[in-house]
Length: 158
Image (cartoon, helix red, strand yellow):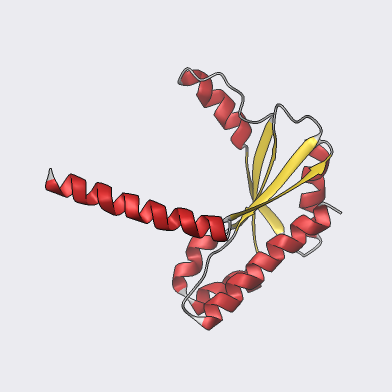
């Protein structure tokens, strides 16, 4: 029983610290635009391809939630559309992983697109911030990946 309380207290303390950190710097960058989901997705794909990058995978998250929601008795539509586009950059991936092999956790890079049922005609585009690193070389390479993600989103939302 003592171990459970210790774990619970440690978790609560970590949550409080993490919550404060999240308030200072969001871990997810979200932008939005007016338009149709398929059109915004096409613009994001073009921005990725304009950099010589190739889409690895499209996770159809909205469809998965709808399908599995029925299986567990949930009927509320979270999204009207939602997908995660995954891709990679050989150069940036090499730079980040040479700087710190643990940076493998950030690969592949991903940009999420979603539309909400109560906001027709608005599409959100989001990506994860990659955090910080103790190594200056790793920090520099992670910032380069974040810049790539930000530039892709900015180009797509022009």
